[in-house]
Image 1 (cartoon, rainbow over the protein chains, first blue to last red):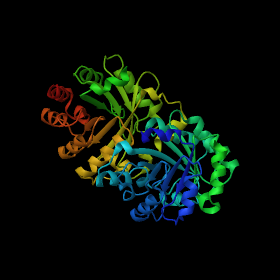
Image 2 (image 1 turned 180 degrees about the vertical axis):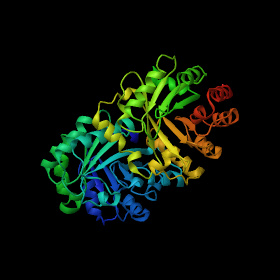
Image 3 (image 1 turned 90 degrees about the vertical axis):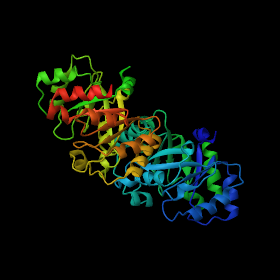
Image 4 (image 1 turned 135 degrees about the vertical axis):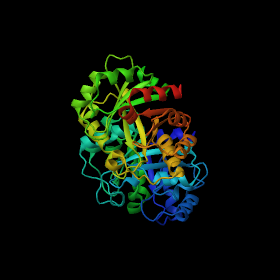
Length: 229
Length: 229
């Protein structure tokens, strides 16, 4: 079952449907050793560009998941997993629960393919922090408390520490690590070297590499893969 | 295990620690045939008045649960269950997730005694709607969508349709009933007669009688108990 295999992922590559992807880059990414591709973006993602990126990544023997930022993008059928985020430290309640209600109201949801993710967004300069009005002033104690709420109160299978666009504070990821019991801990943000990949993979179960692919190409991706294997 | 027995409750009586309770009334309530006492209130509940009410209800052979509206009240130890609400249609995000983080940050939580509740608050005139800034303009489709999100996305074991202070629209409770799969459906609000108790018990798994006890005394409570047995 695809649904359970994601727990073994150590290295995930996040691709943004709003960007252009040369076929050669897709090929290099798909053969880099990364465990899965996550198609995700905060701004400018549409059904159309998501559909196009899906076509580009089809045909590789690599799991693909969609992480929708809006109900429209969550509508893709097929055998794809949907990693559906809730930003627990959003001040705009619609990103905690709201868009989810619109999504569920508007279409049949195949729940067996849905993996809920509890995001804790920590880079105040990021698009996701700005759009969700995230409270990024949290310290390690708050991150630990959000993590426990995510896991024990809301029963999220994934807690995702998101520094989108910058490299995060390992103390925050460590706080989540120490608080977590059974959920899978994801870390994303600023991983663009073997050292950073190794440092965060030592704390999180799964690291997510995103921008580095666009900024430095597939060689950096292969380095980060080697660093966590 | 107390933790699981609550799934058999059909009739629950809600007592407000901010009110005065004559010992005779407590005695009548405890012997009315109600399945459990829930100690709960939105305004004016303190550690002190909660502690006093707890002492008053102790010694009866009846399950007692605390439903805290603030982290302070959630601190009671002992073998009590805590039914901890999240108001999913609150516009003030702290009532969805926020107070929960404060609670978890400030004390050791005995998770085996915590039962998370997804509230959908529908009476705009109620204190709880006002305090949480609940969006009470929902129709049956929205109630169904919130219910599915509560159960399938957030994994709440209880969905609670709350009309606090007034009798609700059975169409809303029916919408939740039809959407729900495994969660327990609670209904509360305006149950002050056998007819209303029977109507809502026909849709919900558990009905909650509150104000009627203060307004009309224990005889009405016994009527509502008989109506659902």
